[in-house]
Image 1 (spheres, one colour):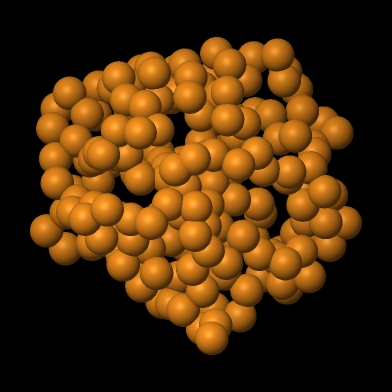
Image 2 (cartoon, one colour):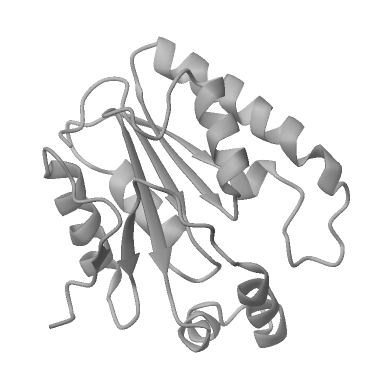
Length: 183
């Protein structure tokens, strides 16, 4: 996928998988303008958070993010969004809200994975209990077409390179797992 106007890149993955780091790296890409939405900043519900205030409002918040995303796309910008924890149904709801679908060639779905023990090390400012509980709550539904990047043992620059490779591919092989440090 060559990045141009009106492209949508959605990042999913558990806590500590590198979503925010990748989001910032892609957002700094020269000659490519992205409007960045971080759903963690907008959503007050986390599937493993025992203190989730209003989980019944999650659909409304997805709709509000979609409205924001639609405005960005209508202005000719590319959209880069970090969803973290999102079900297939809510992902499709968001995409419908911005006038896209998972099969749209202007949409790239990336899912980052990480071993929970690695996530605990990466998220040293959070309690291990919280990170591990988050991983237990993260049970991703397969979303086709989606590129999976295993971030275990990778430096941020390697994760960024794997994502850039996926972006440059005219027809990414969806559903595959990429680990540039692997065999």
